[in-house]
Length: 366
Image 1 (tube, one colour):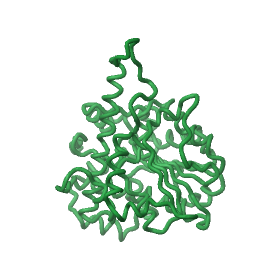
Image 2 (cartoon, helix red, strand yellow; image 1 turned 120 degrees about the horizontal axis):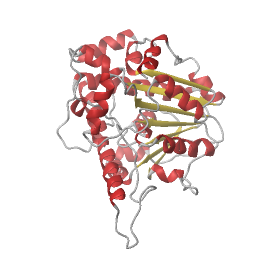
Image 3 (cartoon, helix red, strand yellow; image 1 turned 180 degrees about the horizontal axis):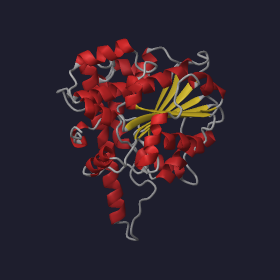
Image 4 (spheres, helix red, strand yellow; image 1 turned 90 degrees about the vertical axis):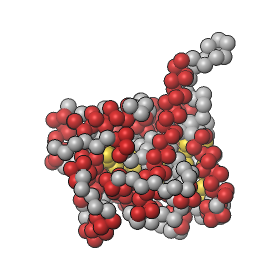
């Protein structure tokens, strides 16, 4: 077997790891004199590491855009890491491409089902993501909420204000798209008396996006965050997750070890370790009408997701000689989706995401 790539350097990060929030969220504590305890200091340090991974995400997106993998005219305007544009390894660029295109497909299907009806999207740990602006440029009618740590929201808000085109897109119009950028720690949504998110419309068909966000919570807390939305949204509701999987094989163990060396802990990974575990998770979280999951390797090789002509285009951009490394990396990240209600059934019922025969290998890992 070829050597396993060092994920300290090869790790993709688009929104790669985000909790997002303000200081002083749940789980913090202080002594009687108001000083910060060691537990709170450790939690703050963990939050800071997670917030900083948005730089990985932004750099990976910028690399893929610069080389021609992705067409995203807004990536540069939200890139905050200087004038020198990054260049990632070919397998990272390809992974960023597949991840983006797969989620775009699910989002577009959601928006195009009953196109006259306004929809709502809630992006957890959105960081420097550009999806709202790409959707707005495509004339989609959507109420879009982004939730993230204050330290991630503030520079994004500044970038938007400094770019006339972006600022114009965020101005709400009657019966048109609306953009809401919330500086919030997702953990406060699990309080007994959680805050009400401004302008969240419980009556609109709603899609929740979590790209490497909920995987940093303890499993019970991740479920509680989802429950906040599933209980508040009255109508059709769906979710799309992008997360690592398969931590128990040699590559998965190395992946976790390398991330741990950066202070990053994937707290849900061992519980939702396989594609089938991800499907079960979504069903238990209230998305009982249907669930699907595919790893990045499956998506890349499926004409339903990436057609042959597009694969050939991507393959011509850069020579990829780490084929086995690509297969390993791609099989350890997945896109999963679930829904309740007729609207999402119409949008996603034709997208194949059921259990496959090869997934029996996941069971053998346990």
